[in-house]
Image (tube, rainbow, N blue to C red; front, side, top):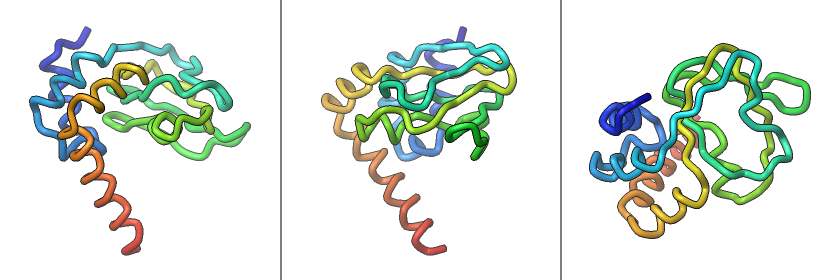
Length: 138
């Protein structure tokens, strides 16, 4: 099991959270639950309710649309955020290709935290803005 400090150190390297202050990462770490998936296990399926954001701690996850693999997710990458923030059913299926450890941040806890700590929202928006700018510059 990861300690809160280990979770914070991990969260510092997560792309969407790089502009979030350490004290706020500790708040996110406090609500993040470590979940382990065995090789071949489904993390979530297309069409299911979006109930959580996942951060891959270690392992490799297949991202699938229908029966086709469209990408891979590895260490320190997030999955499930778009559907969660849009509050729509899952648009993808995720399957662990290896034994995979994730941090699971439940919808309710995350939204409560964001409602109470605008600095976290500001950090995420700042990072998303940079990502969009980079995509538009291509």
